Amino acid sequence: MKKKIFKYKLVYYLAIITSLLLFIISAFLVLDIFNDFSLFKTLIIGISLVINSFAFVNLVEKYDKAILFLNLSLFLSIVILGYPLLLGFLNGYYVTGHFTFKFLIALILSLLIVNMFKVKRYKGVNEIENIGKRED
Image (cartoon, rainbow, N blue to C red; front, top):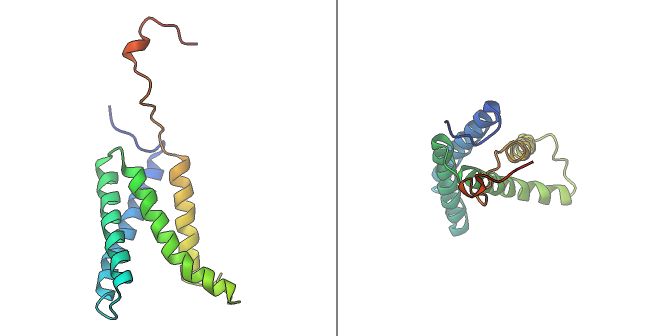
C-alpha cells in the first residue's frame, strides 16, 4: 500500500513544484545577503531555507509532517511577500498589476488547495479494538 498525502496526484505535484520553487528562491536569496547585510534579513532567509528544505524532503519522501512544513513554508512566504504589498496599498499605491501580487495570489491559492485536498488520518481509532463490534 502506497502512502498518500493528498487525495489527488495533481495536488501532490502542485505541492512538490511549489515547495521546490520556494526552496530555489530562498537559496538564491542567500546571495542577496552579501549586497546589504541585515541581521533580521539573514535570520528570515535562514529560517526560510531550513523550512523550505524540510518541506521539500518531507513531500518527496511522503512523511507525515510534510503538510505541516509545506504550510509553514507557504505561510512564511505569504507574510514576507504580503507585508510590503500591504504597506504599499495603505499608502495609496496600485499594487494589483505587480508580479509579486500575482505570485502572492498564486501562493494563497496553493495553500488553500493543499489544505482542502489533504488526506486526513485519524490515529485515535485503533482497529484491533474494534474487531467484533458493529459499525454502522
